[in-house]
Length: 224
Image (cartoon, rainbow, N blue to C red; front, side):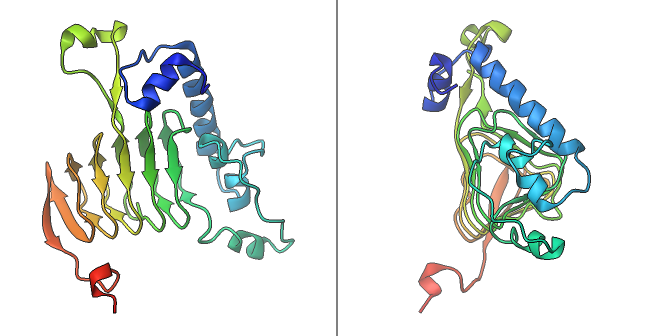
């Protein structure tokens, strides 16, 4: 996959042809992994994380091949092995490529999450999409010039999206391409985020604007 010329153009930020055979093959792989994850039902965190399980779980969506901890025979103790170390995703979720989607430990992703990761999309540690279904993250774009866009025959674009550590994203938030949401910030429900949110600020609205600073001891200039 990484050897495809169009894949290299896509991840490097150049305009690319989305109907490239290798790109479509990876999208098919990722869709199958998402479908399996979404239909797995009530299974253990281990089986939801396992890249090699028959359910094709979250590890296969994002192609995370880190070894898992040894199995504890006590089911509750085994479940606890994953608390705070791996992200938790509550299906259904839909991810475009998976290979470009990076999620930090201790992060919770609520149901009906949609991620268009035609470029790098990162979500840091201890991020909450909690009480927050229907979040959409769009890394994909199209050229504004219709002569370049040309419907299905033209070229696509992309811009990276980064959500830093300790962020809370509200329900039905739409995060557009090229945005960075700073550490410790909160985005209010229903917001459309079109530009960066500074660290430790609350932002909301359509288009989202900074409402106020968040008073927290976590902010570096308040640490003694």
